[in-house]
Amino acid sequence: MTGLKWVSVFVSALTLTVDVLANVLVALLTSTSLPVTVDLFAALVAAVFALVAFAAYIGERLNSKLDLVLELLINRFEDLESRVGDRNSGFVEGYLLGQAPQATVVPLTPRIGRRGAGSG
Image 1: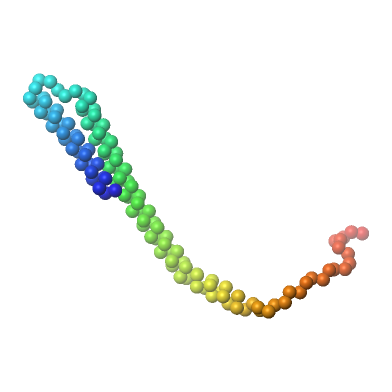
Image 2 (image 1 turned 120 degrees about the vertical axis):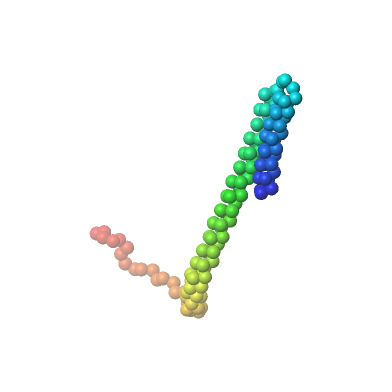
């Protein structure tokens, strides 16, 4: 991105410089002037490359800000994991070790009697 930015700035400045130099030389050496289309084309090329340079600059800034935010987020997650992760894993392991592995399953016996709450 940095190369694109500086190449765009260079092309924009060079285009304007060549156009101004051409206008000055034609005005000094002849009694005519350059056509307006040449000046407009030079201005258009310079403007397009200036916009490309600006977009590359904004892209660089956005990329650096995004890298900073991601780095801070990763550091925060690592900090939280170091404080909370071990405590939770120890709790879960202790809970699982405390369970009886030979626990028997006892089926529920059917209830005999009334099922209604207040019928009658």
